[in-house]
Image (cartoon, rainbow, N blue to C red; front, side):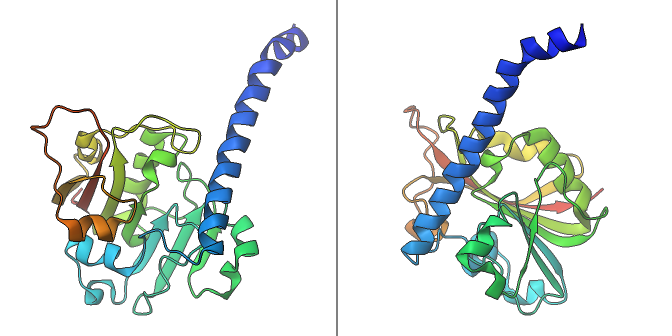
Length: 228
């Protein structure tokens, strides 16, 4: 009976594996292209400071985790921290793109299972990655778990876009509510999606016009503090 059940499930299992493989392949190809062009994707120091009303000194002596970091050294600027970790399911492959020369630590893991103890990090960030995860609710649960009480979570993510292979999750404007009651929102900004570079978006000051009924993607920026 078990064998027959597995036979019936095999096509579905193969399809799931194919989707996961396609997603990871697409993501790696994206980073290879950016690396070849020597481009940053907007995830660098100003995203961690100006975009979310923080200063470099706010990172002094802190433990920092960047979820969905990619291979371009998102925390290379953070010499004032005591620990800086980039978490990404493709981190082992990023060694082919030169991450071994970076000062930050890369950890190969999924956001649904972060290999650190409760409350380990003072600041956790996730820029342009929350819509890439496999399980949104489990990822949020893990974020709330690993942030220390009084610590900060920084989020930047596209909203209301159609699902794709690499971005299977559609994020709503009320995503901040999913972090309650453990976290409270200190900064919330909504932008028109005029660029994929969040600093360009910030500098444009093109705030999302919710009175405009046209369906279109936007960008939400949040700074939340863990209070429970």
